[in-house]
Image (cartoon, rainbow, N blue to C red; front, side):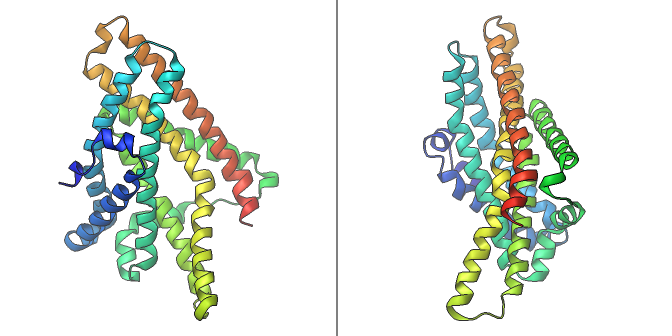
Length: 282
């Protein structure tokens, strides 16, 4: 039922609706995960969310593959992909917000069950140093992001929309990190009352979001672009487009350009994460 709430045509026509789809899918998965599989909720919630998302994303990638094989100026092909990128970024944003809200407002015991794997991942991330002396840190982060991008391309080539697993996982980790930041700051200002408390609360929530979206948005966009490139190749092979000497080169040209664009955006995202975010949130 959930996977039929949104069609690929509606997603591209009104991409902002995908934000609420992501919010709904993850929230329903949280309820079912904590209710039925509480001991494994942090992983089960991801799987249930992915099960709801994959049919929509796969049908959308099929439409994008049709755009890729059409002859004509590549700029027009790229413009045709923009609505797809917009819709999936809204979807990702909805999942991130849902994670953050559940982390902030759920009871502590439930948070531990819902985000056990994510909390472990966040605890294992240790980033030290300052932007003024951090070239090695930049190389480390850029290399790590490149690995994730490659995984997105490979997963999509093999499974069609396989990158959704990696991207949903990243969304849950980012959402949990935002929720952790907000919940920690709220504990500090918990002694406030009245208007001062409300101002501090909403200020903390906004800062918690901005702390990660500055570099998170371009980073995730790069992963979606790489995932689309892999998905287009996967659909093209499945439909035996390589038999056509005219269509398959167009498809490979589109996928190659998307991968190059993803690499450039990944580079920019690493710069933002190492040099810009620490300056804004000292």
